[in-house]
Length: 221
Image 1 (cartoon, one colour):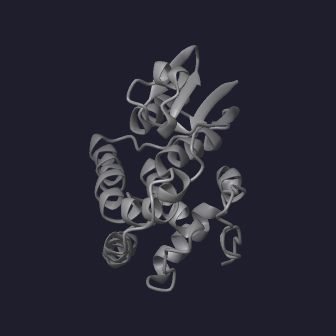
Image 2 (image 1 turned 90 degrees about the vertical axis):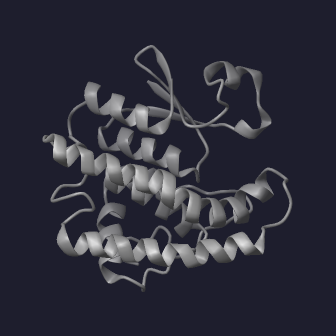
């Protein structure tokens, strides 16, 4: 059985969890307090970051590299399109969410509200929180623009780009930081992806000291 060292609300870990679940790869989840810099964990990944996946006799780090490995070795169901142009668009959007969205939104909201408390790093920086709350509006509008032209974010089929976006938004939804009324098309997209069996374990996450809102696990929110 595969083993994933993770943090429940980490969007990078959630993206890998969604890929594993969609491909029906049995996986044991091991919660890792990576900020404590445990020696055993640093041997698994000297970068000191999650996720780390142990599978097929290998120990792998970096969520994008892990997901691409899973796609190559476990190609069904496919989460990448067939043409180079379409694969480029998927990778572009993964980069958008894991880089730009993460920098402008996730790090300003989730990390300030949750990670700082868990890691005992003090109180949230209100300036960062306000900046994240402002920036997410732009990102939701951009997603709505994409969905006005496509069935899914990168095209007519669900891909890793949708999982990358859903991983970030689900983490923020856990702390009620997504205004689902701003763009109905984004809400409908999230409802579709949230209803997939692969999402069940994510909707079951419970973080001590941070109870989720009532709508978090509601498929008809």
